[in-house]
Amino acid sequence: MKAGQIVAPRRVEMIDIPEPTLADAPPGLVKVRVERACLCGSDSPFFAYTHQPDAYPMRPGFSIHECLGTVVETTSPRFREGDFVLALPGEFQGGLCEYFCTPDDRVIPLPRNAVPLEQILLTQPLGTVVWACQKLGNLLDQDVVIVGQGPMGLLFSHMLSNLGARTIIAMDKLDYRLEVSKRMRATHTINVDREDAVAAVQEITGGKMADLVVEVVGHQVDSLDFCMRLVRRLGTLLYFGVPDEEVYQNFPVSRFFRQNLTMISSVNPNVAPNFSLARDMIAQGRINVAPLVTHVLPFQEMQRAFELFVDRKDGAIKVVLNYDTLR
Image (cartoon, rainbow, N blue to C red):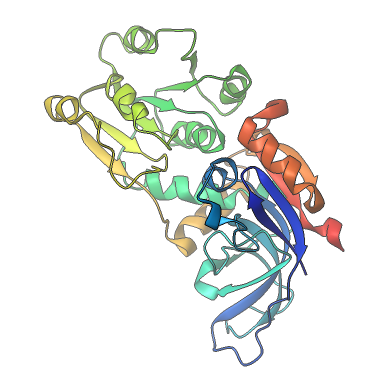
């Protein structure tokens, strides 16, 4: 079968590897023929960062985890051959390949014809937003700032609108993302490279500052200090962006302490309940994810897909790979 392999910094190639099988496998596994998958911010460091020389070539099939497809073999009583599913690869980030096997608790059924495949695929990232929002309590009438308007920040904009936030202030450095923010129900947009974000939030909130600030940038610590300048005393900071380091030495602990802030982290959603709710919200039209799907490329163009996504080229937000082009 075909798979992708990161062979050097910013270089991914298509290779041939053996197709997995469930012969003699224990109960509770499914083998999925992947039809669509998309890139996530958590994939970017593996492609874009320069790792130690002995890290290359990386494991075949690495790095993708947002995948859907058809069950072609199963030892699970919960799924049958032919079922259309969302599936997380059994190996960490191991979805850049035609087929993979995974435990059935990492799989949920999908409707095939409710919306285009590229849209129902966003069940996975939206499920992580569902998981995060479950921790926030009542959001009615709150002023919210979302720092970062990549795919996840845009999903937060729509979700927090659905949950009753009064004001949704979307921040980013890229104007094309901020234009999409308006379609995802942001009430205000701020380009942080051109505007004084703290002053803007102060004006929008009548001096109170935000009740909730959502950090959806990740991969560095400076954004945390920035977020703490936007939130009111006794407010809440949702830390959603993925950190790159085990320890951040310059965490602004004094500011955090003196403002009496609450910080909530969110990672590793509960697959069945969180993803199934996200699936239903997309399938039923309660959240419109169509503005996020900007590029759909053949599997064979994975190099271009990574470049578009990582470098934010050509207005890229969500870049989807079509595995059906292999067949």
